[in-house]
Image 1 (cartoon, rainbow, N blue to C red):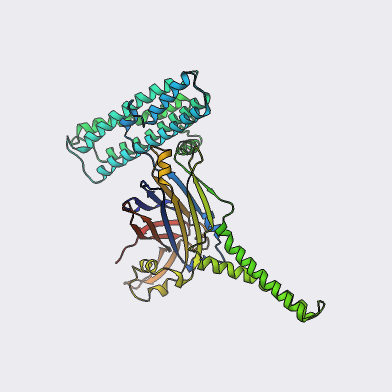
Image 2: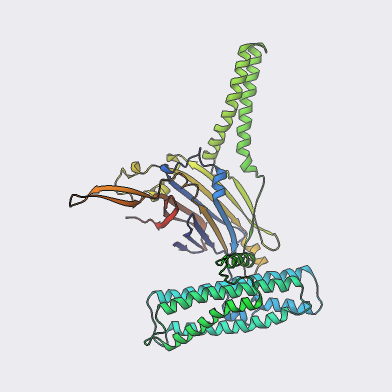
Length: 515
């Protein structure tokens, strides 16, 4: 993973799967009425992959692009979640709402509140399990096999205690939900949450137990407290599949389908629970700025055709060959003029024009809290900004390196305008945002050569030797982020990522720094 962190803005670029990489932007929103975050991504694509304006359209680019805007998971420890006096805990708010239901209060708003809080509870528990497991695993990975009394043993003991307390609180809540006064939709939501919680416990505790065993905590020289914690965590993880099977949940491993139903069900549950965080980015069907340039181009082209027709009428008879020729030629040039002007506006006015505009809406109430604008365009060599070009060429060894790796460049720009004070009024826990972009390189490797090439040479002993060597292509991605820091001063961050590709997909990703 490649990460950059500064003030209120963090960025990371990482491998997602064989054909996609992910850009994740973390935005802390200051207490202002308006906040703007801009990202520009410059793609330097080897010409050998045949990506050009003629072979790769805007529609294809946006088809390769997935973007999500979501709230960041609120931070709340497992102990705080289970704390009966913590009014910010989803567990507290679910219980309070259930009490109102049992008292006879009815209304879709109350049911929607419980529905949303169950999903948020699942998100927060998953976040705490993930972060806790990662922290302990990272300590083990650094070789810090601790002696009795140091952080890891105490931390794991505390983690086990907090898990036990939370499990007791959730078991109590489960009994409350089964009350006959609770609507069926709430009981079903609680069931989805319970199944998802069990899966997350199994996943993250299994990873943690594996790391503990890999570090040899159960050996004769290991810390007995670590061994005891590992035993408890292992037992808790191993109980989960049996629990789900006893509850009749579908998310259990089945040898007959090789686990297909399990993975599918896990995906369904994850999407359901995570929907509490995902904002709606509704693309506007018509935007003034996006339609202005094509409109001007069509108008100028039509003006040329009309002028040519008027000129022909004033000079030649309507049934003359000269009149017919002028009208036909003007019609041909009208379409060409329109296309030329579209390209001209796209390149020269990219700073002001955009392809898509989206409203950013809250997940439950559809309240507009911001907007997002996107633009894509190919650039001529002279159209690449100097600071971007310098970063692209930062690892060149000689001044003629560029001639040996010809590239085409296109740019994707995204502007995000948010209203932090409005968000703060609407939410007391979900405030800061993640902006996630996933990009597929499947179209880029369609015309790539085979992933291996034979190289024949004469070795030192005079033998002819043939070696099968990897054949790769290097897609260079230069990113520029612009925003205002917590002090209100403009900030600009830049980074360069090398995405190494072959015919089968992404081989690896590397951050490129100065030699």
